[in-house]
Image (cartoon, rainbow, N blue to C red; front, side, top):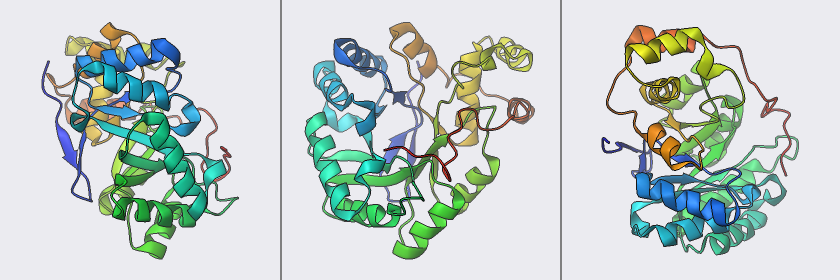
Length: 277
């Protein structure tokens, strides 16, 4: 299996080009799945306080046998902890759960514009980064308007914006904004799980032409867009399949064909109206 390349973020830290989503991986099975993924080569792990599995992620790291310094750990602040002091407390809770003094990438999970505390939350995250408690700071599910506001009021652009992104929702306009501001795009639900995506005839034909699975073709599409996919799987064979996407390349026409499957956001998580606490 090819070595996973990395990107340099706008704060000069680095991040692997693909990672493991951990939503739903809980208990002993969750810890085992995380350890298996690390053993298969994953070096980017994505969790959140609201996933209720930060302890499992930390335990998986410690039982994997891989040095902590090789792994990039992401966690996220829930909506109920928005605000300056609340953010500092939320970080302390996540740090304790993970058993880690430093979190590599710390994100605001949702902007919650109705609450309107995401700027104060961002200011606290800048402080955490400046104190060395967090290596990189970013956001999740932020729109251009939300991004422009935090950049305008603090002068600090997020290193990452993690958003719903898959062939049914390619987010071309937002990705272009990210590129202009040196913000790395990260894709949650990169495979549009629980949909017919991997059975789409256009996608199946492209995958067959490269002797790969439709899943691998989709993940390769993400990589060629410059986005970091974080597929979730507890199955060791599937984890390895999801990582094995660096030995082939899609043509520009194939990338465009996969993007043509666009139909819009799938789960109603519009950042302007969605509430997550």
